[in-house]
Amino acid sequence: MTRKPMMAGNWKMNMDHLEAIHLVQGLALDLEDNNFDSEKVEVVVCPPFTDIRSVQTLIESDNLPIAYGAQDVSVHDNGAFTGEISTAMLTKLGVTHVIVGHSERREYHGESDALVNEKARKVLAAEMTPIICCGEALEVRQAGKQVSHVVAQIKAAYEQINSEEALKTVIAYEPIWAIGTGEVATPEDAQEVCGAIRQCLSELYDQETADQIRVLYGGSVKSSNVADIMAQPDVDGALVGGAALKADEFGKIVRFA
Image (cartoon, rainbow, N blue to C red; front, top):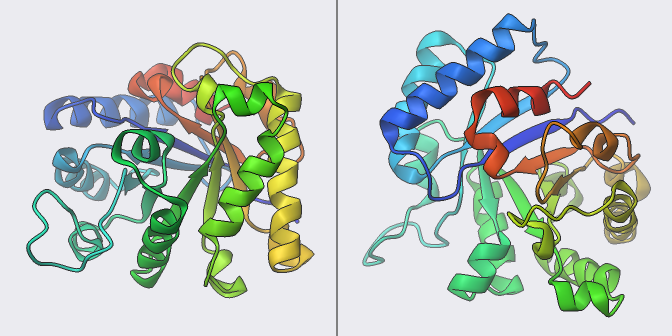
């Protein structure tokens, strides 16, 4: 089974709407100048909510080979939920992907595995693609429990999601100790956990389904290490943080091949 690689940029709380326009224009120019083939790699940018309308207008007006997503979503449809953003608000803006369960949401906002599952199902119901995040903290890694920890997160995230829905999801494995630290899991570290995730999916569903779901790696990915990471059999792309804020650097990551 050939899985189309995905390179997704998580901008986090960076870039106002003017900076967002400049960044997307720069990325598009880089891809055009290097004869990028969008049939070979899917490119996604996930800006802050305040930038999405500007990014939408630019991408749609210039027909750019870039998809755009959100960094989070509410489980509520509407109502008295100050600060929350619903799936309907996102779909109206043409959003196609939503990051759910990022480690920063789990750590700083207390998001549980059950809430991550609820958000993933909400995104699927709105016909968008959830990028479901998982990963272990340093103490879990040091205890040698990274595989069991991540597999438990995946099992919880896919509760009440059938095989047809599962095929519409993307998983992002991010060892928390490697996010924004400059530390990076070795390609073998990434493969160990990504391979275990795929094995878990085969047990939850079947091998055919597991072989079609893309598993990304995230954590200090840059142009200098992405090729080695992408050479691993169960790594299908990257969820990129800091390096996605520089058009030329993210362009190089997208063009890893």
